[in-house]
Length: 250
Image 1 (spheres, rainbow, N blue to C red):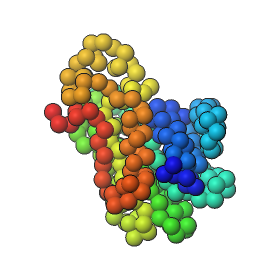
Image 2 (spheres, rainbow, N blue to C red):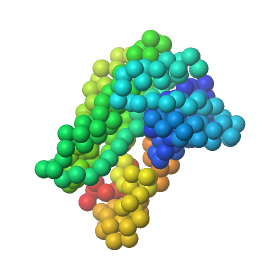
Image 3 (cartoon, rainbow, N blue to C red):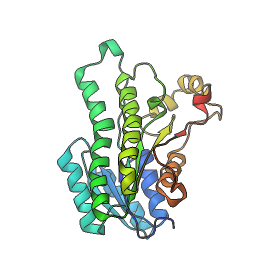
Image 4 (tube, helix red, strand yellow):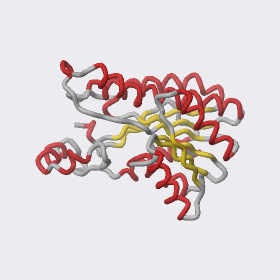
Protein backbone atom coordinates (compact mmCIF):
# COMPACT_ATOMS: atom_id res chain seq x y z
CA UNK A 1 0.00 0.00 0.00
CA UNK A 2 2.71 2.44 -1.04
CA UNK A 3 0.16 5.04 -2.16
CA UNK A 4 -2.29 5.05 0.71
CA UNK A 5 -3.75 8.57 1.12
CA UNK A 6 -2.14 9.61 -2.18
CA UNK A 7 -4.00 10.95 -5.20
CA UNK A 8 -2.79 9.75 -8.60
CA UNK A 9 -3.92 11.09 -11.97
CA UNK A 10 -3.51 8.77 -14.97
CA UNK A 11 -4.23 10.12 -18.45
CA UNK A 12 -4.99 7.62 -21.18
CA UNK A 13 -6.39 5.56 -18.34
CA UNK A 14 -9.19 4.01 -20.34
CA UNK A 15 -7.10 1.48 -22.26
CA UNK A 16 -3.85 -0.45 -22.48
CA UNK A 17 -0.94 0.75 -20.39
CA UNK A 18 -3.01 3.56 -18.87
CA UNK A 19 -5.69 1.15 -17.69
CA UNK A 20 -3.12 -1.26 -16.25
CA UNK A 21 -1.38 1.63 -14.48
CA UNK A 22 -4.60 2.98 -12.99
CA UNK A 23 -5.51 -0.47 -11.68
CA UNK A 24 -2.05 -1.00 -10.18
CA UNK A 25 -2.03 2.32 -8.36
CA UNK A 26 -5.48 1.61 -6.95
CA UNK A 27 -4.33 -1.81 -5.76
CA UNK A 28 -1.52 -0.06 -3.89
CA UNK A 29 -3.94 2.20 -2.05
CA UNK A 30 -4.13 5.30 -4.23
CA UNK A 31 -7.17 7.38 -4.98
CA UNK A 32 -7.00 7.22 -8.77
CA UNK A 33 -8.34 9.69 -11.30
CA UNK A 34 -8.83 7.88 -14.61
CA UNK A 35 -8.52 10.52 -17.31
CA UNK A 36 -9.33 9.71 -20.93
CA UNK A 37 -10.77 11.44 -23.98
CA UNK A 38 -13.16 8.49 -24.21
CA UNK A 39 -15.49 9.07 -21.27
CA UNK A 40 -17.04 5.63 -21.63
CA UNK A 41 -13.71 3.86 -21.31
CA UNK A 42 -12.72 6.04 -18.36
CA UNK A 43 -15.98 5.13 -16.64
CA UNK A 44 -15.49 1.43 -17.36
CA UNK A 45 -12.02 1.34 -15.80
CA UNK A 46 -13.21 3.42 -12.86
CA UNK A 47 -15.96 0.89 -12.24
CA UNK A 48 -13.42 -1.95 -12.37
CA UNK A 49 -11.52 -0.23 -9.59
CA UNK A 50 -14.61 0.47 -7.53
CA UNK A 51 -15.85 -3.10 -7.94
CA UNK A 52 -12.64 -4.17 -6.20
CA UNK A 53 -13.53 -1.97 -3.24
CA UNK A 54 -11.00 0.70 -4.18
CA UNK A 55 -11.27 4.43 -4.91
CA UNK A 56 -11.41 6.00 -8.37
CA UNK A 57 -12.94 8.90 -10.27
CA UNK A 58 -13.50 9.09 -14.04
CA UNK A 59 -12.64 12.33 -15.82
CA UNK A 60 -13.11 13.10 -19.51
CA UNK A 61 -10.04 15.00 -20.74
CA UNK A 62 -8.53 16.17 -24.00
CA UNK A 63 -4.84 16.45 -23.16
CA UNK A 64 -4.22 18.77 -26.14
CA UNK A 65 -6.46 21.48 -24.64
CA UNK A 66 -5.25 23.53 -21.66
CA UNK A 67 -8.76 24.24 -20.39
CA UNK A 68 -9.61 20.53 -20.42
CA UNK A 69 -6.47 19.56 -18.52
CA UNK A 70 -7.05 22.40 -16.04
CA UNK A 71 -10.59 21.12 -15.48
CA UNK A 72 -9.24 17.63 -14.77
CA UNK A 73 -6.79 18.98 -12.18
CA UNK A 74 -9.50 21.14 -10.61
CA UNK A 75 -11.88 18.19 -10.51
CA UNK A 76 -9.24 16.05 -8.87
CA UNK A 77 -8.59 18.63 -6.17
CA UNK A 78 -12.31 19.13 -5.61
CA UNK A 79 -12.80 15.38 -5.13
CA UNK A 80 -9.64 14.41 -3.25
CA UNK A 81 -8.03 17.64 -2.07
CA UNK A 82 -4.67 17.27 -3.83
CA UNK A 83 -2.54 15.81 -6.62
CA UNK A 84 0.45 13.70 -5.56
CA UNK A 85 1.30 11.86 -8.78
CA UNK A 86 0.71 12.64 -12.44
CA UNK A 87 1.16 9.85 -14.98
CA UNK A 88 0.92 11.38 -18.44
CA UNK A 89 0.26 8.27 -20.52
CA UNK A 90 -2.25 9.38 -23.18
CA UNK A 91 -0.78 8.90 -26.64
CA UNK A 92 -1.44 7.99 -30.25
CA UNK A 93 0.53 6.56 -33.17
CA UNK A 94 0.19 5.97 -36.88
CA UNK A 95 2.48 5.14 -39.77
CA UNK A 96 3.28 7.44 -42.68
CA UNK A 97 6.28 7.79 -44.96
CA UNK A 98 8.25 10.95 -44.19
CA UNK A 99 7.91 12.43 -47.69
CA UNK A 100 4.16 11.73 -47.74
CA UNK A 101 3.27 12.81 -44.20
CA UNK A 102 0.63 15.54 -44.01
CA UNK A 103 0.60 18.54 -41.71
CA UNK A 104 -2.52 17.15 -40.08
CA UNK A 105 -0.84 13.81 -39.29
CA UNK A 106 2.23 15.55 -37.87
CA UNK A 107 0.28 18.09 -35.85
CA UNK A 108 -2.09 15.56 -34.30
CA UNK A 109 0.63 13.20 -33.03
CA UNK A 110 2.75 16.05 -31.66
CA UNK A 111 -0.30 17.62 -30.01
CA UNK A 112 -1.31 14.48 -28.12
CA UNK A 113 2.08 12.92 -27.40
CA UNK A 114 4.16 16.01 -26.63
CA UNK A 115 1.93 19.00 -25.98
CA UNK A 116 -0.32 16.75 -23.90
CA UNK A 117 2.59 15.72 -21.69
CA UNK A 118 3.64 19.38 -21.38
CA UNK A 119 0.18 20.55 -20.33
CA UNK A 120 -0.42 17.70 -17.88
CA UNK A 121 3.01 18.14 -16.34
CA UNK A 122 2.83 21.91 -16.08
CA UNK A 123 -0.63 22.07 -14.53
CA UNK A 124 0.04 19.17 -12.16
CA UNK A 125 3.33 20.79 -11.12
CA UNK A 126 1.61 24.07 -10.36
CA UNK A 127 -0.82 22.25 -8.08
CA UNK A 128 1.98 20.30 -6.39
CA UNK A 129 3.96 23.50 -5.82
CA UNK A 130 0.90 25.15 -4.27
CA UNK A 131 0.47 22.16 -1.94
CA UNK A 132 4.10 22.52 -0.83
CA UNK A 133 4.75 18.83 -0.23
CA UNK A 134 6.40 17.71 -3.46
CA UNK A 135 5.19 15.03 -5.80
CA UNK A 136 6.07 12.83 -8.72
CA UNK A 137 5.44 13.12 -12.46
CA UNK A 138 5.98 10.15 -14.75
CA UNK A 139 5.77 10.73 -18.49
CA UNK A 140 5.14 8.25 -21.27
CA UNK A 141 8.05 8.24 -23.67
CA UNK A 142 9.10 5.22 -25.77
CA UNK A 143 12.10 3.38 -27.12
CA UNK A 144 11.20 5.56 -30.14
CA UNK A 145 12.35 8.49 -28.03
CA UNK A 146 15.85 6.98 -27.94
CA UNK A 147 16.20 5.47 -31.43
CA UNK A 148 14.47 6.12 -34.75
CA UNK A 149 12.12 3.87 -36.69
CA UNK A 150 10.96 4.26 -40.28
CA UNK A 151 7.55 5.66 -41.19
CA UNK A 152 7.18 7.09 -37.68
CA UNK A 153 8.80 10.52 -38.01
CA UNK A 154 6.00 12.26 -36.12
CA UNK A 155 5.87 9.61 -33.39
CA UNK A 156 9.66 9.49 -33.03
CA UNK A 157 9.86 13.28 -32.82
CA UNK A 158 7.13 13.40 -30.19
CA UNK A 159 8.82 10.80 -28.01
CA UNK A 160 12.31 12.31 -28.35
CA UNK A 161 10.58 15.52 -27.27
CA UNK A 162 9.11 13.83 -24.20
CA UNK A 163 12.57 12.63 -23.16
CA UNK A 164 14.01 16.13 -23.48
CA UNK A 165 11.04 17.68 -21.73
CA UNK A 166 11.35 15.19 -18.88
CA UNK A 167 15.01 16.10 -18.32
CA UNK A 168 14.20 19.82 -18.23
CA UNK A 169 11.24 19.35 -15.91
CA UNK A 170 13.39 17.29 -13.56
CA UNK A 171 15.98 20.05 -13.32
CA UNK A 172 13.50 22.87 -12.78
CA UNK A 173 11.10 21.08 -10.42
CA UNK A 174 13.71 19.49 -8.14
CA UNK A 175 13.75 22.63 -5.97
CA UNK A 176 10.09 21.92 -5.21
CA UNK A 177 10.79 18.27 -4.33
CA UNK A 178 8.95 17.14 -7.45
CA UNK A 179 10.60 14.22 -9.20
CA UNK A 180 10.11 13.78 -12.95
CA UNK A 181 10.92 10.63 -14.90
CA UNK A 182 9.84 8.86 -18.08
CA UNK A 183 9.06 5.29 -19.05
CA UNK A 184 10.26 4.06 -22.46
CA UNK A 185 8.32 0.94 -23.45
CA UNK A 186 9.19 -1.19 -26.42
CA UNK A 187 6.48 -3.15 -28.20
CA UNK A 188 3.64 -3.82 -25.77
CA UNK A 189 0.40 -5.71 -26.45
CA UNK A 190 -2.08 -2.83 -26.73
CA UNK A 191 -4.63 -1.65 -29.27
CA UNK A 192 -1.91 0.48 -30.91
CA UNK A 193 0.13 -2.63 -31.71
CA UNK A 194 -2.70 -5.13 -32.20
CA UNK A 195 -2.36 -5.27 -35.99
CA UNK A 196 1.34 -6.11 -35.89
CA UNK A 197 0.99 -8.61 -33.04
CA UNK A 198 -1.82 -10.39 -34.89
CA UNK A 199 0.24 -10.76 -38.08
CA UNK A 200 2.30 -14.00 -37.73
CA UNK A 201 4.91 -12.94 -40.28
CA UNK A 202 5.35 -9.38 -39.03
CA UNK A 203 5.37 -10.36 -35.37
CA UNK A 204 7.90 -13.17 -35.93
CA UNK A 205 10.20 -10.73 -37.73
CA UNK A 206 9.85 -8.12 -34.97
CA UNK A 207 10.54 -10.64 -32.23
CA UNK A 208 13.98 -11.21 -33.70
CA UNK A 209 14.85 -7.77 -32.27
CA UNK A 210 13.81 -8.70 -28.71
CA UNK A 211 16.22 -10.90 -26.71
CA UNK A 212 13.47 -12.01 -24.31
CA UNK A 213 11.59 -13.29 -27.36
CA UNK A 214 8.11 -11.96 -26.59
CA UNK A 215 5.97 -8.86 -26.46
CA UNK A 216 5.22 -7.34 -23.06
CA UNK A 217 1.86 -7.04 -21.35
CA UNK A 218 0.60 -3.60 -20.25
CA UNK A 219 0.90 -4.66 -16.61
CA UNK A 220 4.67 -4.98 -17.01
CA UNK A 221 4.90 -1.32 -17.99
CA UNK A 222 2.50 -0.29 -15.23
CA UNK A 223 5.01 -1.62 -12.72
CA UNK A 224 7.60 0.83 -14.04
CA UNK A 225 5.24 3.79 -13.60
CA UNK A 226 4.38 2.73 -10.07
CA UNK A 227 8.05 2.23 -9.12
CA UNK A 228 9.12 5.64 -10.44
CA UNK A 229 6.24 7.36 -8.63
CA UNK A 230 6.91 5.58 -5.34
CA UNK A 231 9.23 6.35 -2.44
CA UNK A 232 11.31 3.37 -3.59
CA UNK A 233 12.55 5.79 -6.27
CA UNK A 234 12.93 8.74 -3.88
CA UNK A 235 16.38 9.65 -5.26
CA UNK A 236 15.50 9.00 -8.91
CA UNK A 237 14.72 11.98 -11.12
CA UNK A 238 15.45 12.88 -14.72
CA UNK A 239 15.79 9.28 -15.83
CA UNK A 240 14.23 7.20 -18.59
CA UNK A 241 13.36 3.64 -17.61
CA UNK A 242 13.41 1.35 -20.65
CA UNK A 243 10.97 -1.58 -20.66
CA UNK A 244 11.71 -3.36 -23.93
CA UNK A 245 12.81 -6.94 -23.29
CA UNK A 246 16.36 -5.98 -24.26
CA UNK A 247 15.50 -4.64 -27.72
CA UNK A 248 17.85 -1.65 -27.54
CA UNK A 249 20.80 -3.90 -26.71
CA UNK A 250 20.83 -5.30 -30.26
